[in-house]
Image 1 (tube, each protein chain N blue to C red):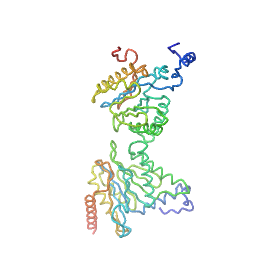
Image 2: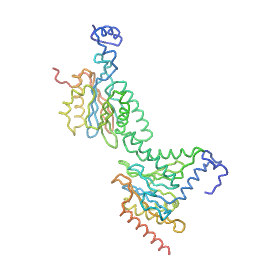
Image 3: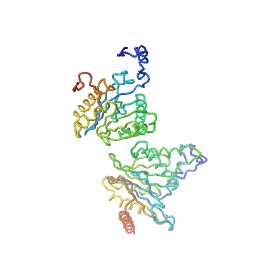
Image 4: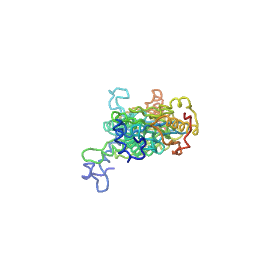
Length: 235
Length: 253
């Protein structure tokens, strides 16, 4: 029985084997983000980090390099986890509303407003949606902010928030290593370490580490791939 | 301003040959018949003052029974001139709109956004023959973090402008002349309440108009809320206004 799938074309061969062994997990699972997403706020800005793997069930890595940090507006980004289709649908709505709002009101939309719109959507459709968001950004009114919107649509503002399947493996690390007042560089290192540690323990997380650093002046996208990913005890 | 409509003034859905919508002009006339209202923007907030005619001595004294000052949301105040019932309808629309914005966006509505939306609503009433324009000038003011104090005024045509100081109603011309003399940017609300009261008293026409009561409120950076003037401040402003009037009267003897 083949244990590696190198392309989606191979699935037709794999299907028979799978159904014989009773493992329907692969084909009947929607594409979802086994994921690690994390955001941390510092004095002048926000750092968001995420892995880049999507899976179907826990057997097929359907995408190795997905962008999980979506741009909602110039200085507002959103990490998503959960069912991919739900994440995308919610992101599109928020993006369009923020875009229109920015034009009509002639000013940059506030991060709080983006988070509120997201939370309202997720709550109103909580019976149909399975998506969990972390929104981070900077605006002229409140500066840097991070909001967590878990499944169900509750919105909380936090200095550091993590989500997705991988996050469960790193809460200990976050609790022990996060301290308020870190610099931008310390935050980037902290976020990269978090994602790396999660990726190595969570089968649903993997690929490369995507980072977005947002402050007053820019939203800078970065990638850590291969050797650049922080290394830890590999057992 | 006494142009005859000549049949083009019967509905708001018609232009006259010289490009006027007479219904809107007539609505503006309704505002000009009303008591004077004004708003002044200082360094730390905005002050409202209203020349409230006392229609009957039997009216209850509390401000809420007959008033031309309203809070649209906690942080936004409104003063209205014109047909009172039209004003109440517009205030209700503004309140609903502000509340809906809060619900949808999670933040209090920015003043500029609200002013534009209320103006659009007023404008919508100038397009059709089945409804008439609002006979209201509404002055909206607020103090917002990062922006400071702001004043907007909406007219029956649906036009809205921002102001440093503005008046509407009977004596708006006289009031504007007085307002232009002030160095508003250098004055605090404590200074402005006296000036506002003085202008209302000076503009009031003793011979032609009913007796009036001074109504005042402010929105200050300190509280970021629209509040009626505390009793002691109102008395102080009122006394200042009366005194200024006496001095003016004695000057002109």
